Image (cartoon, rainbow, N blue to C red):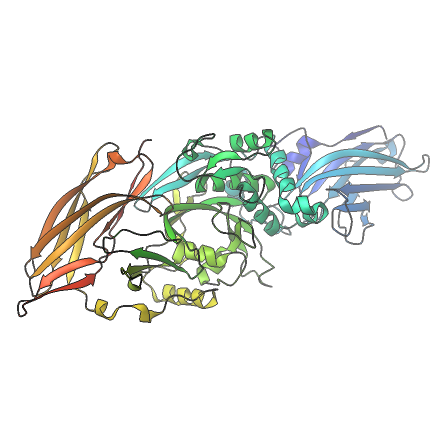
Length: 604
């Protein structure tokens, strides 16, 4: 053989990889690519033998699908479906043979070695290593599990290199631009290096390379490798000061620099990231590998640590929330990856968008990863399905249960909020820089009967029972008829106080004397209490069907970090009143719902 032409530019353009390289052969599985061979003499398909071999990974084998030996229009391996045929552009009498080579639509993705042996009537068998090529998932191929039917969706979720990530609070949503950069020339090599560095590959490389045929497996590996909790992953997480030795999470605006730093530092973690960084880096990797992917933000996102689908909050007499393992984040960011789920259903019931989360919150089968969890399963409350459907269901639809803790350590349930978790679930709209609300994909409308039916089904199918209704204190059933209202008088500005107006109306027919304690606490974005900012005690008499108004301020300039300021007021405090017909004062525990959150990002 005299020469070989890999037709890199033509092949890569046909395989939608030209943005990665025009000089390296990067193709997608299940789709033909062309290689032209120049032989020393004429080629006769009926008598001459042309045999190709492709291999990937260490110790490649036909049994594992990591090696295939095939001839023109025929396969030699028992499980191989790689194929080659003579293309019409060939000039066989002149020894110019153009081959159309097609990989199976379920071939493992990664780097392959392609070699050739030729035996003609005039030459003995000669062998030659032809090239290395990279094989990716193929959303354009109907037989591939990641097939995405609509071209505009493939353009947005595979090809687009820039996007938006939504952050803030449910009442103050903002966006930040992000450069995914999945087609930068070196990113594909970095993504394959991530797969090679995952613990499963280090333990058993042949099995891992074989499993890379499955987008379910690959997405779980990437989810684990983006964080550093179990492995030599990419991004180290940190949720508060100090950020010494690294970058603040808010300083990142693209994935490429992060991935390059990891690769160039011998796979040492890049410091530091939070949820939007983990998700955005993962989106880059999945899109680069060919798995359609989009970034999702959930506002009011629950972190249910004990899998009972409730977020438990505990309050003392002064409204201060003791440490609790459960929390509610102002927002949390993950990705959705598009793929089939034949492992869950014989039909296509759970195919489509799957939640995959790289932020290390809880372990999944002993590893800090999450998903893929079918969005359809989350919507219907099928919390017994893999992977981690119960955890993601709680993130978007857990009930918040508030408990009063007494001095002796006993507790009683005082309130259940069924609607605050999982609001304004958002992603970037297709083809335009706008927010698309996809909450209806995850949950039925709050307040509807169907939402409660699904929630109760999720509890039944889950792993742990909820609280029992008999934990509610009997005297809490006799709640006072007092209507609260709190209004933010000015927009939070760094260095200025927050001014608020508190009003209470007595809807009862008797006069009430109320002892009200207003507490303000600093809350990190993951919902955990950082510090007590302010506590104020107010005593006020309110006549029947009358109201009271009082103003108060919170000094934001005291904060040194980015916190959400959550007003925890009238949480299980004492309403003290004197009945007109009795000569004593009664103290009744009473709880008013927290009315709103103020998200304030303060300078450091």
